[in-house]
Image 1 (tube, rainbow, N blue to C red):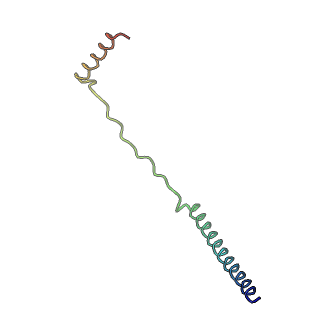
Image 2 (image 1 turned 135 degrees about the vertical axis):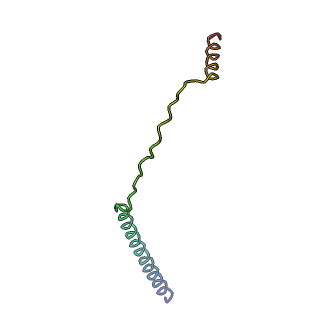
Image 3 (image 1 turned 60 degrees about the vertical axis):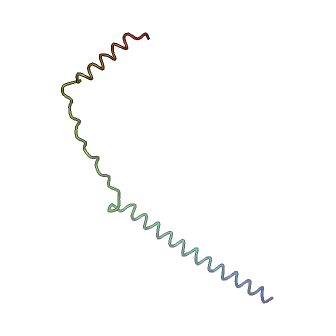
Length: 85
C-alpha cells in the first residue's frame, strides 16, 4: 500500500513538472512571436531594395565588318548557293 501512495505522488510530481515546463515553453513561444511581429512590421528593419545599377550604354560600332569578316561571309554565301538543298 505504501508503494501505491508513493507511485501516486510520483505521478502528481511528474504531471506538475510537465505542466510547468509546457507553460514556460508556451510563454517563450508567445514572446518570440511578438518579437518577430515587431521586427517584421518595424520600418527600421524592413528590407530596402537598392535600385538596379545603371549599366553604361554599349559603344556604337563604327566601320562595319573587317576585311576578314567580309571575305568569310562571302565564302559562306557562295558555299550555300553551290551546295544542293
